Length: 191
Image (cartoon, rainbow, N blue to C red; front, side, top):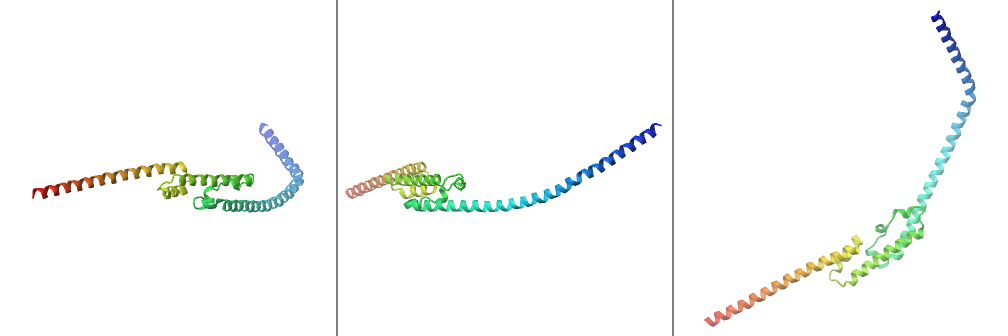
């Protein structure tokens, strides 16, 4: 009897599940039609969005290139005689490409870099050093005035040591000549 009851309950459950599926299919038909149209419309929107995005990126790249070109022209017009020591690529800052970074702010940074370079070159010239060429070469590479001053001190110390060594050698040579002359005179007198 229990087995028979179990079979009846299972049959009822299957019948209820079949009815649920029938109701669900009837209920889902309008939704499935809507979802198909929805996916088609969303696809069209995504395609349009991708096209617009491509155009926006192209426009932004063009704006970026024009801005950098303008900044490079500004640099060229203002660099003057420091062009041998400073290039646009050396001072270029990636932030300048950002649309939110103002052109005027970038030109101020460029002018600051140019003035800093000019000041460094003038400081090296004002040293009136015999090592000016070496110091300017170092400055062109590093743009670090403190490093150039350190190099100037090192070169000056090396030169001082070399001059001292030459002076000592010259004094030794003169002493040797005097001693040689004294020996020669002593030999002449002895003869």
